Image (tube, rainbow, N blue to C red):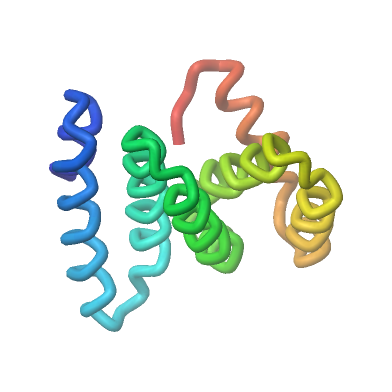
Length: 127
């Protein structure tokens, strides 16, 4: 994705434009593109963060986490989005909300997401 190239080269405003463009294309498809939308929203939240637009970054990551939560069984790389959202809640001192979020995820039969992500990260693997 072109937005990722812009992010890697520090061109965050250009990355934002590409992610917005990708979202419009994905949202117009009307197919099962929810995991792809979550990934683009996740990337867009990182671009907003680099542009010092924290409130937009947080709102976008929250939206990506909702989609990822509902699509974890379809696409396991959604776990990284959920892990990043959990860290956001922790950074803002919202530990009770974070615990509720994980309890709900695990009660729906979802795997222990944070455990899986930590194993991958400890082995320098990416999802």
